[in-house]
Every structure is written in structure tokens, then in C-alpha cells.
Amino acid sequence: MLPQERQKQILTRLQSRGQVLVQDLVRELTVSEDTIRRDLKDLAQSGLLKKVHGGAVLLSSVPYSHRERLSLNREAKRKLANIAAELVQSNMLIFVDGATTTLELPAALEDLPLSKITFVTHSPVMAQRLSELGFAEIILLGGKLIKDLLITAGLDSIKQAEQFRPDLSIISAHGISVPAGATVESWEDALVIAGQEKLGYEASHMVLPTEKISYIVTDASTSECLGFQNKGVTVLHQVRPT
Image (cartoon, one colour):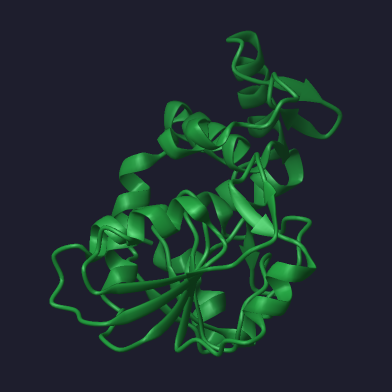
């Protein structure tokens, strides 16, 4: 892998996670620690990140706004959403979250020959986008609005969600690894959308065990997905070679 491509992947991971660790990058990019440290030094000198002990962080401590996250890796998100859309069938009850990747799902469903699908979501933005689909019935969970994420949360939202048993839950993970599973919470049958930068990374959020994941939609390579396949997870959309 050329240094330019490797550094681009480091920045993608940094934008997604908010911080990166040298040891994680060594494992994920299969290069030496010295190589990663040189990359981080070059990126810091270019004003693209801030080096810290053991890794690097974003220059700003302020998280990306929802609008900014929407524009990150937009084309990749659309491609992943298009693959996820292929698993949606008429007459399903589907939970879908409000992550910026899953927000591309309504557009992916627009031209498919579907009828009467009930969507449950905690995202007002997702509800608005789904409302443009003639076949969609929408249940918006209430609760406290988290302004940075534009989703509802809290006990009210949880109690409402517990009333439903979706045929499929479509969620976008903050990070996902074989030992930990997906760093999100969902129901029994889950489709997890995870870009390559999120595989092998465990975020500090609630965990969905790997054995509860039915599908992973990703743009990671075949070799990066073998661990999940060995656990019986169906992996879709492997666009890069091993």
C-alpha cells in the first residue's frame, strides 16, 4: 500500500472514531509501528491531526456536527445502503437507526417494487426521509432529543422500542470486531452496516454480540471479514480484493 493511500485510511478512521491508536493501526493496516508513527508525524505536520501519546486525535475536540457527518464518505455510504436495501422485503417490520450511513437507505429503497413496510426509528430525520416513500408506514419513537445526533433517547424511547419485534433491524455500527460484536444494541436479527474503517475497532458503547448479527454490509476486504464469516455471519459487498 502506498503511503498516500495508507494515510488516507488513517484519516478516515480518525474522522469516524475521533481518535486512533498506533497499535490498532499497526494491526489493521498490517504495517510496522515505525511506519505508522512516520505517517502520523507527516499528517500532523500537514495540519490534519494532532499527535498524542500512543496515537492521534482530531485537531478540534468538538465532535463533527450531524451536517458534517452527512458529507463524510458520502459515496461509500450510498453504496453500502444500496446493498442493505436488497434484503428489505414487502410487509416487513423494520427498525432502522439514524446514523448517517443508514440515512442513505430511503433513497436506495425508492425505486424498488415494495409494498407496505412498517419502519420503527428513533430518528426524526430518518422518519422524514422515509415519509417520501409511498409504501412506508412510520413509527417514530419519542424521548429526549440528542441534538448532536438528531435521535431520541431515554427511558421513554426504550420502553416504546421494547413493544416491537422487527423482522429486520438495520443499524450502522460505530465499530465492530469479532470478539466484541457490534458496538450498538438491537434485536435478535440484525443487519449491521460497517465501513472498512470500523472493522476491528471497538467503540465504548453498548455491545451487540456477534452471534446476534445475521448480516454485515461492508466495503472491507474478504480477508478482513473472515472472522465474522467463521462465526456464521453473512458478509455482503466485499468490493476490495484480499
